[in-house]
Length: 230
Ligand code: DC
Image (cartoon, rainbow, N blue to C red; front, top):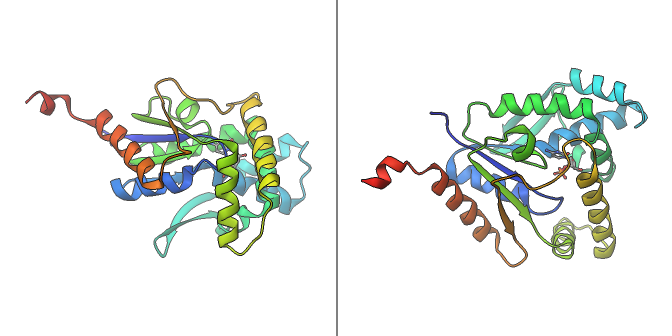
């Protein structure tokens, strides 16, 4: 039997990356950040100066782009055509463009194919917006992670503060609201909770509590019924 797939979906800033990475470490599974893949495409669109309205060109760019994840000093990095773009994809421009770029059907088709190939062997924690609804609807473990806009904006501002960047929490909240709306109202694979997913509202939970909750769901879903009967 294949090892399980853990699908974690949710809106921007809900802590999916942190949680998914920690769950993967604890279980010895592979962690795959699908948002980073959409961001990598957005970065290349910016660099090549392709107008956002040119869906065909953006889809063609996605098809020829070689996207890979590799470990560098124990941390997962993303490579686009051999270049480490892990930092560049976090720029405000790439962040802003990643949302409209991810709404292009040709982009999603190609990236979903890649994601299915990366996860087909199981033993992965994959996080994004449509993992349990589209990419792996049969994933053994499905979690929908969310928190209020206020809490997500507060966490993001704190993160930026730690990096030495002062940010206006109200402006961050506004950007989060906009991105939520765009990601959940788009035509192709909008953000929504999958059937059979467990909802985790994390406003009043610590990171450790959320990780424990996901691992508990994993253990429950993957428990061998025969040995339980024993
Ligand atoms: O999770 P993130 O902020 O890195 O994602 C960047 C953008 O990509 C975000 O606007 C939503 C989109 N995305 C998506 O449409 N589907 C995914 N599976 C992951 C991300």
